[in-house]
Amino acid sequence: MTKKFLDKKLDKLIRWLRFQQVVSRIPKESIVCDIGCGQDCLFLTNIENRLIKGIGIDQKVDNAIEQRNKKIRVHQADVQSHLPIETASVDAVSMMALLEHLEKPKEALEEIYRILKPGGRLILTTPAPIAKPLLEFMAFKLKIIDREAIEDHKQYFSVTTLKSVLRQVGFEKIKIKHFELGLNLLAVVVK
Image (cartoon, rainbow, N blue to C red; front, side, top):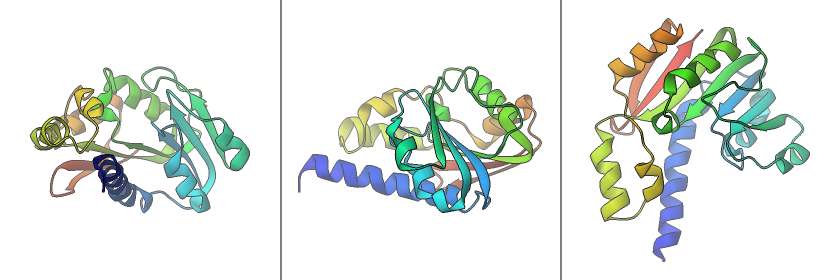
């Protein structure tokens, strides 16, 4: 097996484990916005049966997804500025492995707060500070995960720092837990 093949399999496994943490927390028959959906909008296409409507937001999106799936709409946008979504129009927002890449995480969370309906939920994942040396070792020494992605990490959030920024934005019902052997955080936050 080639190294590139193994890298892809590892990335898919990590993404699948992250998806499993989030998918069960998405309410059925809801309008869901996936922030940082990726060009392929994989999460929303995989949970299509749970959706009334899915909205994917990323810097690069494939508009052909909209022809293949009538429930999903995609928008190319900077998640740290105004999102092209109406205020209080979304039941749930997912954001997986993105917060750590943002220069202005508070601004992105403020926009998420704005688009969520009252009682809507944000489900996000982000690596914990304890993950930093392991991720760097896997990226820089072993070269089995994407080096550029790890170099792009702006910050790592502890439970305390993540709760603090979420409270500053206006969220009050905040539950955060560790998963993947404590290396990642899962936050489920209700507006």
